[in-house]
Length: 225
Image (cartoon, rainbow, N blue to C red; front, side):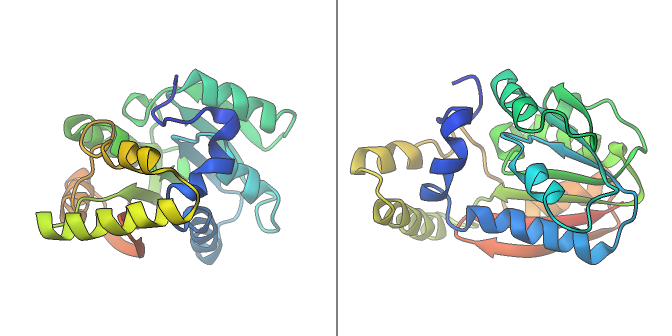
């Protein structure tokens, strides 16, 4: 694949819920959090935008009529798909083929989101990616991310991986597909602990850091500049 997942852009949204529990809920919770902040005329950067599902959903809802959006992803395939999905929408200002660690914005956005994207990059690049997201935000802007996280010990990892495998089996994946996906841990994606997430965010300069979602091996965190 030309993106970091084992799925093409065309099949991603249809299949991802069979792989990650509560996946569409991540988007609902992100949008609900942003609504609670009561931004007006906000500018929103979605990095690691994938198929553009999050922004497509936001644009379809009341309360986002005056928002402006920029979408970035390191996959040309994903950006091409997203451009087609959002073609002609005047709220979308730009698309960019780049990862978070290549972002070149400074003090420009009220909101930066990164949903299930930074765990695909290794630790040093992840630090750079988060710093770039911080720099892209205006003062009091919010960074919202969902990521696979690493359990604190091997026993905890064994338990949650067993649960995750059982979830995938119940949702129609074959034993081989489940095993293949679970073996991607530490090879195709690189989880870090929640404590490490907080440490990176704090070192980048964020003054408020909170968890707002936790399930299986996925965590939702917001941080305010």
